[in-house]
Length: 235
Image 1 (cartoon, rainbow, N blue to C red):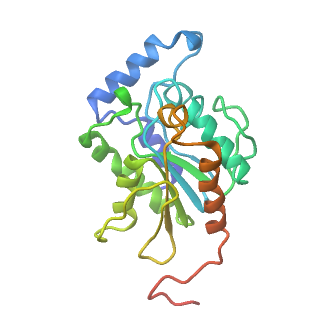
Image 2: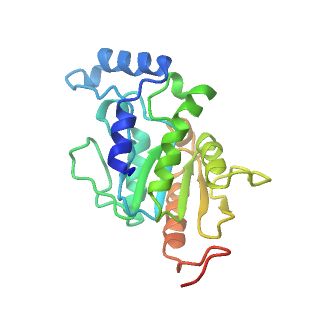
């Protein structure tokens, strides 16, 4: 039987994309000056969180000196500072910050993953790299069978996640901050957010209140009474 633990092991051992393997390992060898005394992870980064999560957060990919360094998605970079602070405010995390995999962070009711599991050059995976990584997210979605809200951080994550949640559904919904898309199964919702990249946060395109609003809404959706999917027996 598949499991999140087995999936994590497969993700960590993946070497399917030569360009990403070369890049992530080069970054791990060369290191940023401020982290020169740290040993980098330098491998693909699996998802992290509560196996019984009702909220799934999907980002683009690990940061070169964030998840690629710490081995945990969104941990140790400025985007992660925004993510875990917002999750904490909304009641999904036990602390507002995360600097390393052993820092005591716990997620309750939430799970965090990425569309691509290796740090890509310039934060831009190729379409081929995106597609090779997609099966990992497919399996993750199947294993996280309590999820009712998926938050897509950015257009890239939105474009990857929607076809997995609603295969063949037309028209595809447009991405927009705080845009809310009900899934055809009648049970789940896709909720969009601008990515908390420095490009967005430093320019004011994404503010802290605007980002917090996404997770406030996610918490409201998570707490809604469970509904019976179309065609299913209520028993």
